[in-house]
Image (cartoon, rainbow, N blue to C red; front, side, top):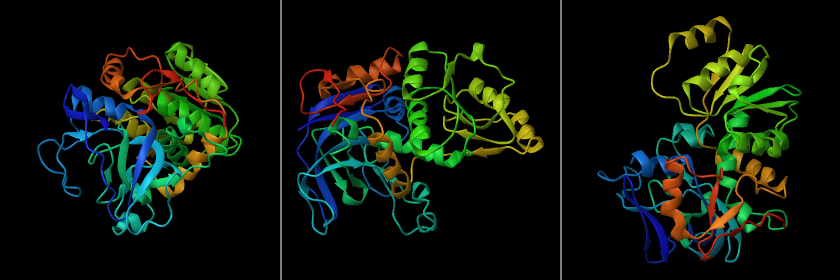
Length: 356
């Protein structure tokens, strides 16, 4: 089979790999839709950070090279012993993050904080390939009457967005702000519209194309940082840019007693003014991490089913052979699509199909 394989920083290749066999508790999935996110790009551009290249992963035991891809969906084509909830031909979307179920965090339902957490595509072969072997527990059935094969590939990044929205817990009827309209920022707009009854959603984003996409997803207003009315107050602010300027803007916008959700990863080092404002204004500073499969993935599928067109975010399906060029385009900030999806079964670029 063809697979997108990470070898080292700046070295990702499309190679032939043997088709894996499902082990007990696992399924073999023929991939129909797989995406690339900023974490994948970061591994290729300035990693490895998550992919073990020198020392075997302490839980999985693997050391790369490995097949990339943690955002994927496909059809079950093989079932290992002990799997009775999935069957061949079934369309599934993968959460990819695997938890142990036994540690203190798992027992509290915080499986995203599992002491033994690992992820397909980072610590074991993932879904940027024709086939993927995956634990059945992270493969969630998809309602094909409401969600297409192409759209199912967006479920995992949407689950990150739904988890972030849930962590912010915005008040009914309130106005919220999102700083940064990249993949997760745009998905959060759709999640807020589908899962909550907030009123206005403000997007702060310097890029005009991304502002337009945010409006298409359901944002009420989209402005540049220069156009922003910093006197306006918001009870919940999602900082999705990961920039120092974005965090400063979040502090300007949030009201006393409000909540800032740090969706974007900030650089190390927190300035004292942030901590003073958290204390003096009684702010809640919330950090979302990945997703909780059982809580967030069903919500992600509901958000997917709430729209019949996701082309503003991911307009095309690409063949796997284009993956190295796509990684390079994102690293060089030349990519035009917020989300790039791959269909390993195609040998040409085609329009994504979102209507059932």
